[in-house]
Length: 287
Image 1 (cartoon, rainbow, N blue to C red):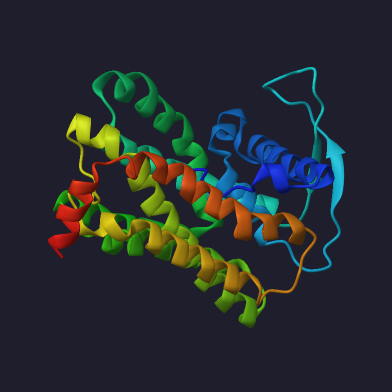
Image 2 (cartoon, rainbow, N blue to C red; image 1 turned 45 degrees about the vertical axis):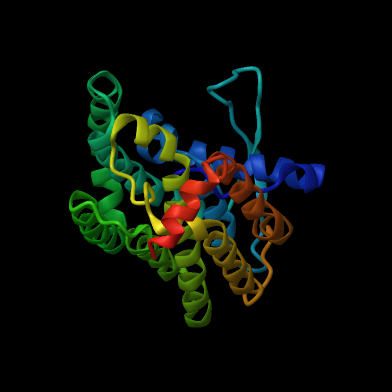
């Protein structure tokens, strides 16, 4: 995962911000206790969001204290709930596949001294998580293999690529124990997955152009309508969210869906929208 799904901090209450940080810390602590210290590097905002989203209505949230390895003076509260183990396991799986994907794009030095060693360290953790989350792991591998084929063949539609990644997140909806919520979550997470892929492609345009890496949005007619597409996905995800019963993190999740997603879109597209307007017009006329 990539860390794009996060709240808009200026509009969060202090209590909500502390709770959000507590969930993040709880996920980090669970990764360490279940998969070892190195697995902590798989923690990110996207799975913090998923931890909160998968919490059940009426679920009791308690907190404990854990020591933060980033600053041993701090003892952050870790909000513990029944889905943090699931979120931790899935984050290990996605972290492993993200590292494998990075092998294609990373430069020689980063590949040899960062990506490959990290992949070696996390491989054992991945195998453990794959045993627990076998169905999700199989779905993720199948869709990522399909995505790899598209990218290898220089697929010129970012939307077609995004669909493959979106189906991976959609599969997380299966972790709901209610048929209705399972369908809603699957549809909601499909929108989120689609957004994450497009946001990442937008975020990487400058670097990929300079390095000659594949990016489906480079010279693509889809770039001209990317803001409209992303905002439509955000609105659809928010509408799905309204169909779910409120859980203990409802206020934070509301902030994410109604403010955080839009803030992320605005921040990521700043670099894209600096592109010469004539280039955008040229790609738009090539539809």
